[in-house]
Amino acid sequence: MGGVSTAWLDGWRRVRRAPAILLGVFALTFAAAVPFAVVMRNALASHLGGSLEAATAAEGTNWNWWQEFISQASGLGATFTPRIVGFAATLDSISGILDARQETTAVLGLLAGYLALWTWLQGGIIDRYARQRPTRAHGSAAASGVFFFRFLRLGVMAGVVYWALFAYVHPWLFDGRYADLTRGLDSERVAFAWRAAFYALFGLVLVAVNVAFDYARIRMVVEDRRSAVGALAAAVRFILRCPGAVAGLWLANALVFLLLAAVWAFAAPGVVSSGAMMWLAFLAAQLFVLARLAVKLQFVASQTSLFQAGLAHARYVATPLPRWPESPAVESVAYSQSQ
Image 1 (cartoon, rainbow, N blue to C red):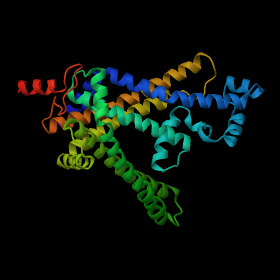
Image 2 (image 1 turned 60 degrees about the horizontal axis):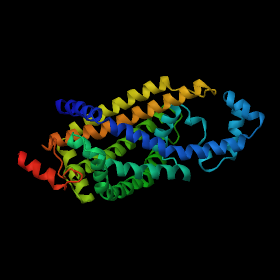
Image 3 (image 1 turned 90 degrees about the vertical axis):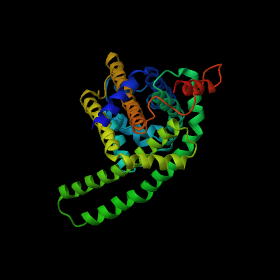
Image 4 (image 1 turned 180 degrees about the vertical axis):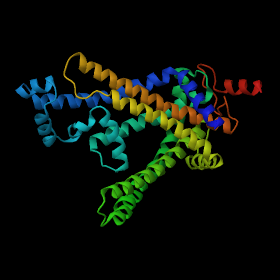
């Protein structure tokens, strides 16, 4: 447990010492959502127009109009449902993953764009956390550029694995085994217990795959690996070498997320009227997004810390740090001279 607690605390230290990363990721996340918010705003304004329903909707929740809008909406507008409000959005996201729910084309486009953006950012983020010293904008951008296509190849591999899980494993569990076990049952409690068990099993498989690819990205950056297959194999070897520490660290970070989700469940605003309360609700939602991104970065930083401590790579990354206008070889020479 000592290694887990050390890596967990060290992860928060690395996140805290690089606030620009958190603020930058939040700003990019917010900016990526703005175009879709504008599209939704125009769709709502077009449907409401200058009707009496518009005035009612502005004062609070107009359920009759909301149901009418959902019934005729398509594309991004079809996602404007009650489950997007407050804590329901968090539960809906988890439910959508475990139930393998098919998203609309518009949402899939948003997710694809966000994943591409995150793939580009991750190289610079891991590089900064691994070095534990400022890399400045040019250093972060250089690292992101170097590892983008490597992470892209790794992402394709991850996509194939996730596709196989949702296309074959999920139906086998829930449409096959679950249906067989609950056929003829007269107790909803037992059926729910079986479904919860299958949720836990499928979620465990997803977590295992996610952790393996997380450490593959870390090994790529810290050890300057170019092969996606080699990085993934090396990540699996590291996990098998210290499964207790890897699992313990993931659980510690997951508990922080669950605590954050519990706080949000009590504090999340519902549907509010216009005016100051609306802007306060918007601010609260953005603070939750910021906190959730901090937890996401904590996963990256603490896993990087655990890997570096486990393989004696602390405060060292194989790739030299770009220094404008000096050659990247400068850091490599300086590091060798310091040994």
